[in-house]
Image (spheres, helix red, strand yellow):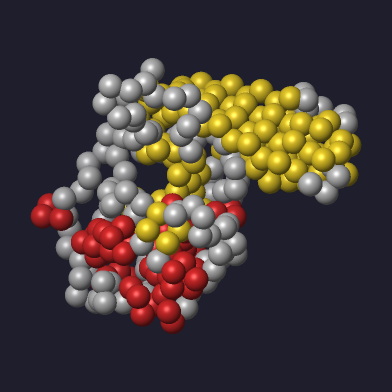
Length: 293
């Protein structure tokens, strides 16, 4: 399946910005089932400096600097790529490594993969282990439970017990508040799952990207109404990093487009940087379109 993602970001400032320097995570990365074919980046005003690279996690990044006064910044990124569907691993054909066995392996890691996975047990800027998160998850991830079965059950647990509501959280809402109010958005549910897994001694990472949405039967799909999406992945030695989407209660296959992964959202923010002047205020508008080509 081939897709084209177009992501347009517009910042409008209260006063002219004299200088800005930015780093963006807006280029989908290659994965085991996803391959980028071509990409196009347009920035207005044109940057005096622009360069692509990779961050610590291997995510595609690009840096740019604008040195002319501007009251609006527009970043238009279009990427074509193809995705091959992957198996949504069925419990009955999976190796039966349990949560207890995985915790035992992580206590004395003897492979590079296990040692790297331990990084995702540590606290990160937006996710900290806690007794509340542990209490919510520990019965699901008890020692005798197969890790994949437990992760599937926990994905379903979040899906059924939490309400999707974009008006109840911000990017800075603590996980304990999300857990208490039982509502949030995809980023909150991904962070919650990761925090719970780390609190019970299991490695998990944050997945950032896009999700193809389809219109109701008989209706045309509107341009620009898609959005960024977030989910999580769990490390299972026999299988590698396996992804789960608690917002939609499924294992991603060919409709989830991976942009980047890291410890939490702060590692893969779509755009971050420094501006000089600008009047102290700004307005952000984002348009995302995911379509099959």
